[in-house]
Length: 93
Image 1 (cartoon, rainbow, N blue to C red):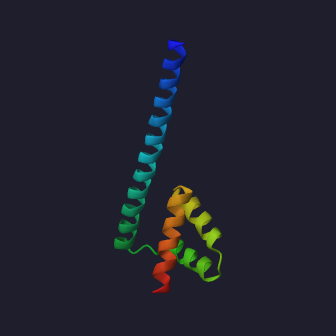
Image 2 (tube, one colour):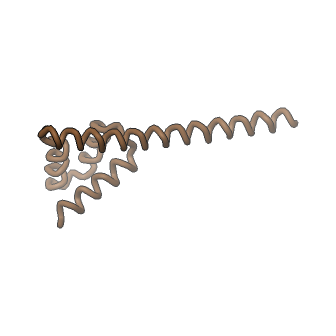
Image 3 (cartoon, rainbow, N blue to C red):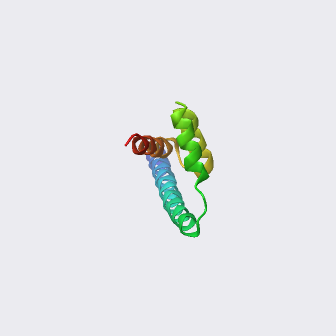
């Protein structure tokens, strides 16, 4: 019985470790994307992704915009939704 409990606790610990690692990777990707965008802006690279996302939002294709942002950046669904929501709020102002 104690052996099964120990294995269960080890399994739970491994799952928590994996979740923390995934969270850290997402955070790293977000930080890297911010830095890449800053560099691109400084050297004059046009931001075609944001332009495309804005076009999709104007056409009422919010889900396609979220999917496109996920494809381009590699972020998760929640992060992509938050970014597109922020982008659409910015466009309305």
